[in-house]
Image (cartoon, rainbow, N blue to C red):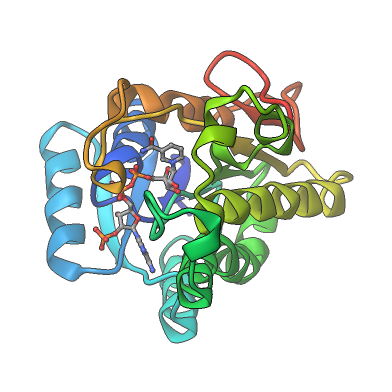
Length: 242
Ligand SMILES: NC(=O)c1ccc[n+]([C@@H]2O[C@H](COP(=O)([O-])OP(=O)(O)OC[C@H]3O[C@@H](n4cnc5c(N)ncnc54)[C@H](OP(=O)(O)O)[C@@H]3O)[C@@H](O)[C@H]2O)c1
C-alpha cells in the first residue's frame, strides 16, 4: 500500500480542478487526474508529473455509471484505498438565461454532472475512503448556490439568477451536509468549497480570480487536520452563509 496520500480530483484536466490537482501534488499527494477525455487527462497528468508531482490519469465521466465503477475498481486494484476525493467536475449550461427561459434539458444536464455525478462518484468510492485513516471529501460548490445570498435582493446573484447552475449548487450543498451527517461518527470530513469567481472556460474567462486562487479553498479542505470542520461551506479563508 502506498504511503503517500492518494487523491482523486474529478474534472482535473483543466481549470480549477487542474490547479487543485497541482496544489495537492505540491503537498506530496499522488494525484489521480479524473478526466473523461483520455488525451486531455493524460496531458494534464504529464504536465503535473513534469512539474515534479506524482500524477496519473484515471478515465472518469461522472455521468456514466460504467466509467465510475471502472474508476473505483482501478483505484481499489492499484491502491486499495482513497484518502481524498475532490468532486470538482461541473458544468454551467444556462449562462445568461433567465429562469423564465431555462429548459428542463438544461436543468437535467446540469444536475447530471453537478449533483447526480457527485453522488454516484462518492458512493462508488466511499468503501475506499472508509479504508483510509482519515479521508476528506470536498465538493466544489459556489457562492451562487447560497440561499442566504440569493435571497438578498441587493446581491449580485439575485440580479443574475442562473437557475439550473445555482440550484444545482444549492442541491450540492445539501448533498454535502447529507454525507457529513452520515459520516459524522467516522474520521471522514465532508465540506463544500467556494472557489470565488475565477477565469475559466466555464465562464468565458470573465472571473477576476485565477484558477489557482480558486483551488486554494479545496486544497485546504482536502488537507484538513483532525480538528478541522465537517459539514461546512468555505471560501479559502471564511465561511459562506448557506
Ligand atoms: N470558475 C468559477 O468562477 C467557479 C466558481 C464557483 C464554482 N466553480 C466550480 O468549480 C468547478 C470547476 O469549474 P471550472 O471553472 O474549473 O470549470 P471548467 O474549466 O469548465 O472545468 C470543468 C471540468 O469539469 C469536467 N467535466 C465536465 N463534465 C464532466 C463529466 N461528465 N465527467 C467528468 N468531468 C467532467 C471538464 O472536463 P472536459 O474538459 O472534458 O469538459 C473540466 O475538466 C465546477 O464544479 C464549477 O461549478 C467554478
